[in-house]
Image (cartoon, helix red, strand yellow):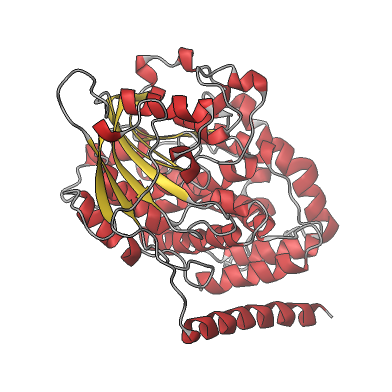
Length: 492
């Protein structure tokens, strides 16, 4: 039922002049899903208060509740078409009354970690792009059929929502920056091994994939206590996100995964001066895939000791600074970071090696990130145990793993959990293999701190796909084209 509803919604959005891409589809579905979720939350709280003999004060005033404007019902539970707005009336109410009212919660909320504040943030950042009130009515009717009150329903919906985010990432344009392949995130979580009670941070959280996968990993603990469950909900995940669409999607994704009031702030992380980070601000775990290729303004660069326009390099400095002593990190970054000869790159590698123990480098194949032609690596390190222990007489090693050398990744054959299974297993002992090796810290050039991936076991091999694999991809692309043509014919 859920899958068909999502497909029906996309079919309506396909006809909508104001929505032109998967990014728009996901954004517009998100704000409507959020209001439907909020309605369910309010109803649950009202029933709970009634059972306790207490009075419940609704967050939303009556005219702005889902059951009033979106889906008023008759006595037999059907949509009351005499009261339900549609056409221009519905569009004008949403744009002229509903959104301004909901945006106003940002000023009225008691603090940034309340659901009231999240409501104000969301509806101040996005706009209704569904120009036809009749299309909007069709979509509302579909969403009203969805139920995510039980954990089973939330679980199924979260999988469908993740699929929408993945499709958005595959859609080209700038959608890919919101999506990190979930198999890669799961592998990073398994290597970093966060624990309940530790604070987990992502200063560029996008669609909140690291939080959602960490939540699933931690809640699977045997004998999870009520206190631990409360800690997971309220005092574990701390995120920041600059872009409006990503902020909205991240909050909705966490809610659907079961995190009721996500601690995500809508701010530019890099606007914070590193010197202002105090001990109370520090985190136990950082896992992130900061945006690469971006350029920050000169005034933002002034916040960092190593000044560079490269966004990812500024984020890496931020992550090192915000980690507690002994804190652990898994950070995705362009592989050129390992070998660039410019002053900023050399200085940043020196900072990393002298302030942290860089114990593992995972080298990812081309095509890991759909729509992004750059190669990437994952840096795993621990703060306060330097790789370069000068004068201590100790020798540290960096373990490299070259994932699936020669593997052709693409839309029809993306990275999967099996691809990463050997890496996760070997990383525990840092054993040598045809794809893994260790580099002695003493061998690192102290003038360049070059960390280039140089597999002593033969390096990356060129792999050619079988004729069957090529035919399968062509068939998949043909099927996708046929679906698009079918939609176009439906409009004619």
